Amino acid sequence: MVDSSAFGKALEMLPYFLNVLGVGALTTVGLTLAAFVVAAVLGFCLALMRLSRHRTLGFLASCYLEIFRNIPILTQLFILYFGLTYIGITLPAVGAAIIGFGLNGAAILSEVFRSSIKTIDKGQAEAAYSIGMTRSMAMRIIVLPQAFKISIPGMANFAIGLLKDTSLASAAAVPEMTFKAKMLVSETYQTNLIYFLLAIIYLALSLFIAYWASRTERRLKVVKEN
Amino acid sequence: MGYGELWDATHVELLAAALATLQMAIGALVIGLIVGLVLALARRSSSAPLRRAASIYIEVFRGTPALVQLFIIYFSLTAVGIEFSSFVAAIIGLGLNAAAYLAEIYRAGLEAVPKGQMEAAKAIGMPRVQVMRWVVLPQAIRIVLAPIGNVAISLLKDTSVASLIAAPDLMLRAQDLSAVYFMPLETYILVGAMYFALCFPLSLGVRLLERKGKR
Image 1 (spheres, chains in turn green, orange):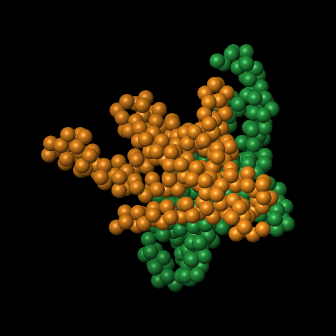
Image 2 (cartoon, chains in turn cyan, orange):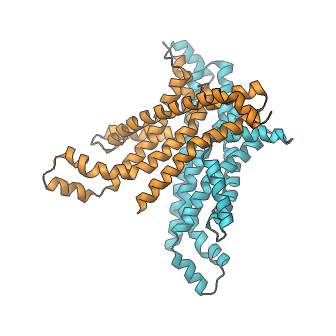
Image 3 (cartoon, chains in turn cyan, orange):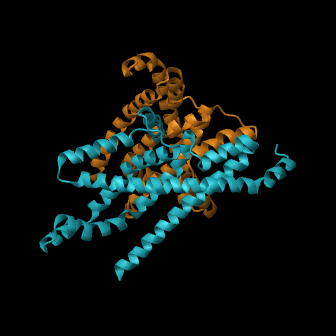
């Protein structure tokens, strides 16, 4: 089975592994953050489109949602990656991944935003209209700040899913953490140790997002009670 | 060469691969449903170590990418002498991954049945098994059906990840074929449409169940 000298040798390489994976982790976090921003902006627009009174806008947003939610993200990434090259745009792989995860995430986040906005009691918006606020004012001042708080757990879940999904970018040669791990494996053949380290770093990052979200949620609640 | 010709040239292989994708998703769902149930029961058990073990399992599998789980199951276990085909490794990996999500769904379903009902059933002399069989489960199943449908859709999409450990699914076949015909964009759009054709009816079904549940 596992002989001890081989294990000792693997341990000697541990600092090197952690170093390489750490650099990859920075790319993973950066990719996650960038894609989150794209997804949040676009997802918010989609949520407003679905809530709007214009039927056509709502229908277009629904079509977008159905397409992006019923096709695997890996397929979407490949379509985008090859599609952009096809029409003559050569983006670096990282750029294609940010756009791909952003477009896909927008479909998920728009549902989070929409359901959060819908949970705010209609009476609040009506009260705002009755004191003379316009529709957009009521939305901005009354509804959205409350909906934002409600959407935090949903956003955190999405962020954790996104963090994990960025591992798929390794298939498009984005130098993120999983890609680095694969390089390390083919370089040193320390398969077990490298993939376990990789899993532990992902787990730590996921738990950090979950912790940070619940802390932010608690803080915002205290403000509300004051 | 347009989409029509590409489809004519590749549809036999693509449909066979779609079947493999379906088999993979169904196999993983079965494993997930069984392991998930065990996990959900473990989380409700009176033994603290059992509860903690189930919680750790769920945290670990939900906190790490399915791709990394597949790498560990496929490559690491092979390195210590346990060998699977990539197809079997994918079914096991995706199944164990889905189990973590399904366990939470089961738990929510069981918790949604008010305790008073169980107590009432016990008060009229029903044994524990019968309380489960006649009072709790019929209601819990109705609650968990839609979320389980969502897991099934995710699984169907996640089988594409298995192509990265070279499991012979739709996505792997797409990669092969795009190398053969030099039409990567068209091939992936075609395969995307096939995934859509598989997932969209399921999505509609889940939405129907959700609407029924709300009434």
